[in-house]
Length: 387
Image 1: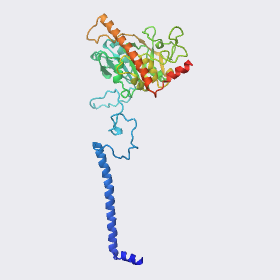
Image 2: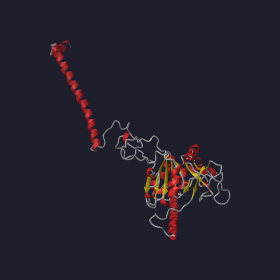
Image 3: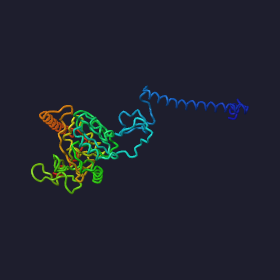
Image 4: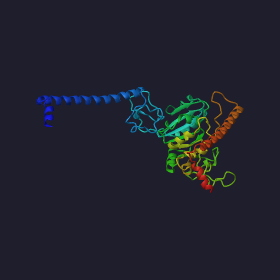
């Protein structure tokens, strides 16, 4: 063993030669290490570039689990997370920097949207003036196409105007009030134009709604001056809020055992007020092709974010007058229709509304039947009550 050791070490008996050999091996090792490390880095970078260029589609990615994105908006997958703008609002922006601080210290937190025609301009003006611009964005849906007729009003240039001839409030709402567009607004007033607001204060109304926990609501109707379609909407004198009404005689009785609209959990469609959360549901409930929304009112309770017996109600202390003006089906302002033509058009509108209500009812029943994962909370409630 000693001889073997001497024979090996004897190849480089000089200490300087041995030092040179060890230095050479160390340098070679460092070069090899740097080569392999650099090669791995550039290979990864190369793969990433190829993936971005679409030249390769499936390569192992050690970040795949850590960077998996949940509920990502469709179409935004190619963008970095920080640049994705999920929502918008109705705030108007200046075309250029005027040198004045354009930052709004307090943005309006609520939205008033009204379907309007120029013939009801005076009434609409009084409605809009009731809603302070510091708290409300205003959006007018012009179903007659006459936007220029509003320019002489002081607030006209500060509200949003949208025009489409002979379209309903619900047609506009489905297309222009998507939940992502109105995500900044806590409450959405989706009103008709034929409402008198002498006894209505929006701020007090919202204060009551919040205190009462109402997700879907409406101001009560003055029974002496309003066109009344449903008894539940009639104002109760001396009351702040009511959620049900009683009818103890005749057909369609409503009593303490009633659990369904129109006895409770229901508002009429001329002046509804929706919370942000409830509107996210209601928007999806509105059918794109059923523009009159008849029948929708009976299903609004499903969007009440809980029990419709508690979260849907009529505010009595802040009330309005519903004039019931037959504006839909009238002229668009370019011509003066005869009485017979006007009556015929209104009759056709009502017939179409009734047809749409039947279609909506069939769609609801079919959807409830086909969705095996959906449980109707109010069907169970009705069964419990009946037993």
